[in-house]
Image (cartoon, rainbow, N blue to C red; front, side, top):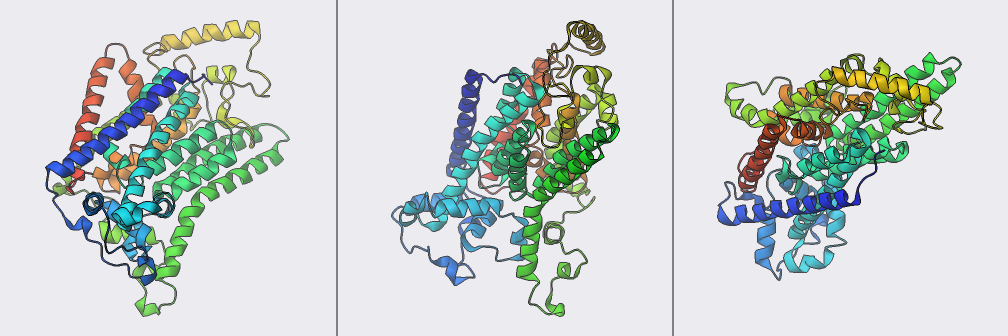
Length: 497
């Protein structure tokens, strides 16, 4: 792995902190200069359970501060704070997974508990949400940089990609009481540990990402993809059937672990809503053969479903999501065209040069990690002199086939192994398809903002000779416009994404 520069790490930390301070400043200014479209955010009826109201304070020392914090909690943040305060009271609240409300509850009752008499319990919950998400975002940027270095093996490109993430177009959600920051932190952290061979540790991180956002279960695809290649490699080797079975079982168990938090939460909702009721009193989803509460809520309350958003009146929302969708599609096409033989074969047919130079980090033993650049026996990655000369000649020939030299192409000189990029491409492709055909398309801006591939592609394009400056101007203008637009609209309860 290319070593990470301490200077670059400090620089990224500066940008990550500065971007959060900028967003919080914009939120404060937007709230103070404009009147919110909907003022109902501060309404907080008593919890249905009387046991949940023991923190209620009739008087606080700083009521204006309390009001300012409570009124800044808008859109989905209202649900997260309500769940942290009162638990899951209503059916539609089960659309919001429990990890963020749980963290908010724990922080409010431990770290920030002394502030409850000062600003009130609900304001402390809101303050906890803001602190958790902004701190988590800083760590997300750091993990994205480490992950990018591990995959791309180019600290300069990795740093630029991470800085782009710091000012991504969905930044407003990463500094509000939303689950994006926690999800990105757990997802990037889990993938970083996965790339470094800490499979069990990575499984825990990725499982927690599935308890922060429902799309976290898609991270199981990374483990399934590597398991698939490992089993294929073991079957191709004679007398390795036992090893193939072991790899398959370990991969299946790790993938299942990532699904467990989401499945457990669905079971929790079923027990709370369906159990103990007569058949005639049950909700429709309780009677289904596979009672999935999350799918029912998304369809019934928010109108989410295949092609249900394809309406003429939704054209403005498609336009709002078009920049991030265009960037994501360009990212997918770019990497597929760069190594078509790898992507079209789903990694089973790697390029001949890659096979001779390195062993794919996704095809090491079940307990071994994806160590880039090791030979098959894992002992050394130093080739014999005559072999090195031959491979250098092949590398030159390969570079002649690529449009730009290695400075503009991420894998043009084998700085990274293409099969490592493949699961990120597949993941992003599935997310783009879901955003366009199933979800509310305007949500794509924040839904796709946690994909590393988008930032890697943008970073490489900004360094490309000739077109790099134009790409840079477009990308930074897009990010700046959505940051200011989001701060202005979202903070004042106007529709954004």
